Length: 324
Image (cartoon, rainbow, N blue to C red; front, side, top):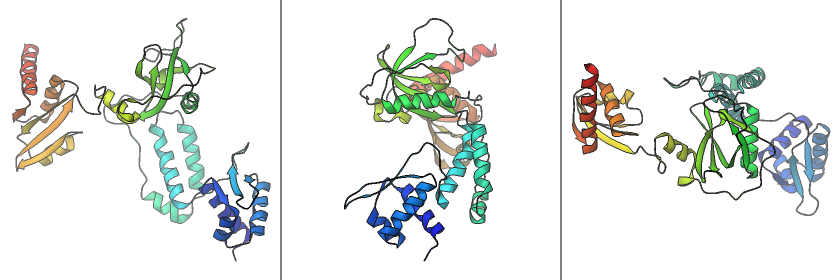
């Protein structure tokens, strides 16, 4: 028979795993009587865990939120996921770096050796993408306020800073129906329906200063394309619909495919022989795509479509003028 302490830990783990547990199922999982389950539930309550009980033949138990955060119990996979997430938190731009480091130190201090060895195998250093400017931090209070409005489906009123400068004038606040918070490349974005502009907009969270109270509740709308992250990615590519570049073309590069793949980005590389490959990529304009292809510093032919070929002509004339 397991000790009382071990049984309490097993009971706590089960209660954390799902919302409702019938008493009979808990007794069966723990291999004890209903009476023992009731006594163990009382012990957990004395330790600060709010366990609610439902009476009747189908009654059971539920772990509720309390006024204070009691000790939590994690299995091995949850601990690994938690430590990796805390280590990656330094590039989220959420302004929680110090808190994440303290939490990570606390978790590592109590890790059993078997988990410590597993985590050492996946230790990593987080870094921003090459060429990215440092992402401005977003105050955690802003993220919480915006998230609350998203979850409650309440109109959000906020002041919007211009290029990082706080708004100080008497301009009226923006009014939006907030739908999703999206994190991308270390920045946080709010996808919302702009009530004043009557259109979908994407707002940088680091430029938002929420006002209180929030406005009335609203019925959620469908984000274009049905997916918030895809919508944000599409807008970054200059598209208002599908998550795809508006201009996509291909050329045959006089380079081995292996030399092109490391610099292909989101383009596709098809080997055509030992020293030739077809490279297909996209951009927000044909001239921008033509300019990007020049980075391979190689001969190219079989340009497709004609719009890309004409962009090479325009770019050539532009470079010729610049050279003189």
